[in-house]
Image 1 (cartoon, rainbow, N blue to C red):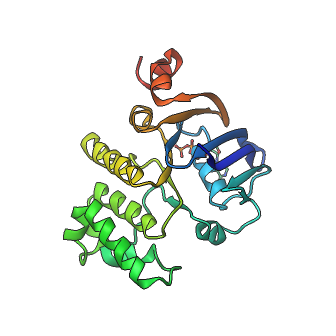
Image 2: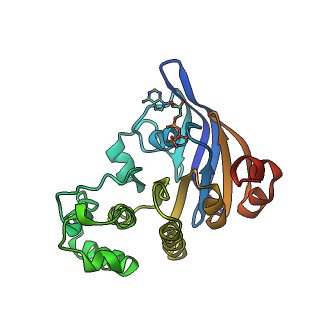
Image 3: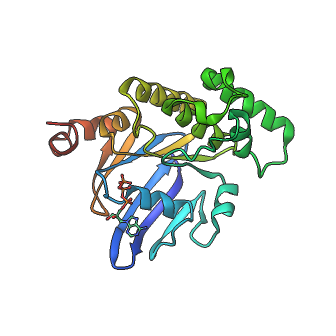
Amino acid sequence: MTALLEVQGLEVAYGHIEAVQGISFDVHEGEIRTLVGANGAGKSTTLLALSGLVKPRAGSIRLAGEELTRLSPHQIVERGLVQVAEGRAILTTLTVRENLELGAYRRRDRGAIAGDLDRVLHLFPRLAERLDGLAGNLSGGEQQMLAIGRALLARPRLLLLDEPSMGLAPIIVQGIFQTLREINAEGLTIFLVEQNVRQALKVARHGYVLESGRIVLEGSGPQLMGDPKVQAAYLGG
Ligand code: ATP
């Protein structure tokens, strides 16, 4: 397997706060890989750096061999690295359809956009039922589906998710993760950041544990799930 994303020695600081302290990891083509850790470990900061929204102090981020740290956020999206925002960032006064279309606003391939919209509505039938309703009337789980659907309309090569489980009931979380599996089975590479360590390690082929800005453990999903340190710290013993 070849690495689609390669991160080497990434450091990010906010003033004197060293949020990310020299981490290295990769994501291989076709897999779901995860970065898990507690509140404040530096997960969101890592994703912000990948998306070009914060400038790293050091390190390199390469997508399919191309260095991203010199590119602007929109150039990074054009290269195919697309993030589903934490807290969803849904535009509540627009309809579901309008929110989805925003995902494709940089694209000019009308026919392909229509096909991608069909595919998203097939993945999320709830969105199809509410296509012309206001996004603000959706439940939390439906808003998360909408955020994922909108990201898919940008035609990602690598989809980044920041805590898709946040604030959602367990049954809804299971549905979201099942959908991530389906999208991945269709060929999309996914990098998932999560505090819900159990769910994340269940879907991921490989994972990293982040603590205070450093990767302290890595392994396959089952390996990490069985690790006594992971069990004690994140899985309630
Ligand atoms: P969460 O799950 O709460 O989002 P996280 O693992 O994503 O946690 P980060 O949000 O990346 O962690 O935060 C890492 C560290 O950087 C924390 O100490 C946090 O307080 C600090 N931090 C994050 N954003 C900023 C900012 N804009 N300015 C200053 N410090 C920040």
